[in-house]
Image (cartoon, rainbow, N blue to C red; front, top):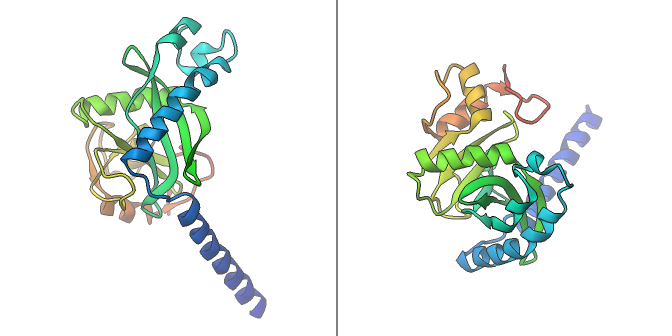
Length: 220
């Protein structure tokens, strides 16, 4: 009994320390000047990143050919949130565009006031975000949020919310989340209907975690 208590206490302390570390490193304040610096950094890094794509593998990253690299630009910024905490993870996604079409996503992270490259890809998600911008964002959003749920392994989206503020308002399920809502009987179709944050939080408590990203969760 004592051994079990010690393990629980140790785990609680570790989680507490991790929460402090996350707050210090991943939830740094982001104002408009910082976002502007992010775009400057992303614009400078983008040509280098695109050149890393292997020849004849352009389609794997959402491009038709290498000539499109010269036309690449950047879309609106998406701040990444975690559903469980209701706060930012510290990561941002910036769509890579060609003639206004979303082709892929840059993943960026701010640490110690400096922006760093953290990943590239997500062609399918980029296309999905573009569709949601047209329908939910009315075609003119200035910013977005990708809300990741690591319990149900699915993603939601929001538009035009103030960066860094606690999660609130309506969540719009991306395809991964729509499958979960369909399985739970909450949604009847895969569409663009928004759901209050509180409702999604209540729903997620009825699910067991399922290993594997974007796998439909199982009801308890």
